[in-house]
Length: 188
Image (cartoon, rainbow, N blue to C red; front, side, top):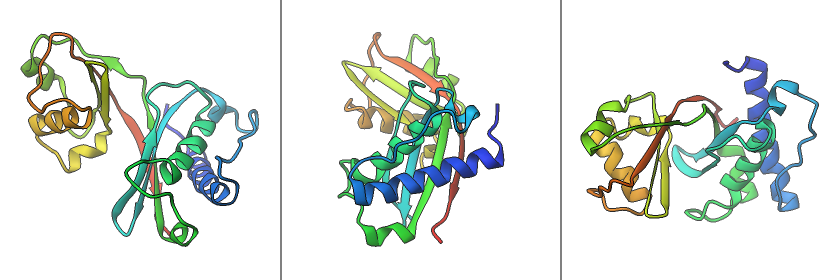
């Protein structure tokens, strides 16, 4: 069920407030349960941060294990301060930070017996994909299709992200697809 504009605004505000809170408290902003019943239901989300058009952090969860509002607060903090690809966010970066939230659907396991069969099931621009093999796992959000529109490139780059060779194939390879409801706010 799509989120209302009010719910989207609340999730974005929570993400920004959690980052602000993290700057002074070194932890995510606590979220009180029960104040926003629709957002208290378990949900999985990714929070993506951009600064001056460049990626500045992206962290999320793939399974709905905690209330959505809490998930967004935790992931916003983690994207700002725990994404190992970047130094922790500094206070002077906050005003120029664009924040995007992606709320994930329940992942759907894909059945396939070859790479070609897997590729044929992917819906460019719509599917996010989780890939798992050899104890390694990676995901691309549906927005990654914007920079990798070809199915073969999307899959090869996801394999690399998961720590696998781009031509890796195994009968034990597992994959799930999901969709997202994504929205964001630009820096003031």
